[in-house]
Image (cartoon, rainbow, N blue to C red; front, side, top):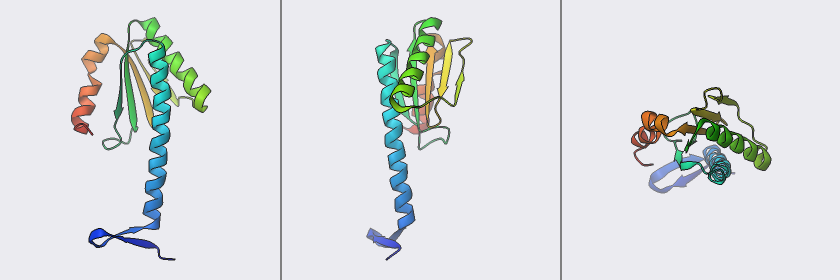
Length: 140
């Protein structure tokens, strides 16, 4: 069996690199499914301005960030609990780490390749994560 395929312009791609690409694509599709469940959960609990940022090309921290605004500390806590519950129920997925539950003005749910940021409006405006990542992503 040939261990590489010739592509246009004499570029060689090994079977191993094709397999890596296939596995990476499957991983990204799974992360997008996790993100869709999280977004549905946030929308069900009336999160404001839910935004999904695909950050794969610019960081190894994660592949997808979700940023959403809550109207109060209690609302942010409710949003976090809802995302946690839905991802566990639908995909048996639990966060590796949760930060900010004590203060509840910015809660971060870290699922590894998916990170959910839940913020009060003033914190979201101050930190402006979307602008930071859009600039670095150049609208990828």
